[in-house]
Length: 80
Image (tube, rainbow, N blue to C red; front, side, top):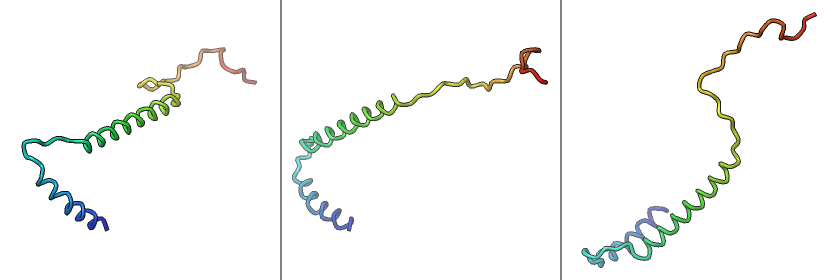
């Protein structure tokens, strides 16, 4: 099925491409609409990302692993 729509698109768009003046190629209204839709999509994604990043709560750990310090005498729990 996708092959049929691609061939139909080529059938209608190729003659339009031949009518375009080779010296005056501009993006036109369709280019503006595509650009505007992409800009709105990026704006929406950035707002969503900021909202999700605000929810993240983490504590930064050091890159070197901590070694446990030996306990001093008399500071541990009483045995007995």
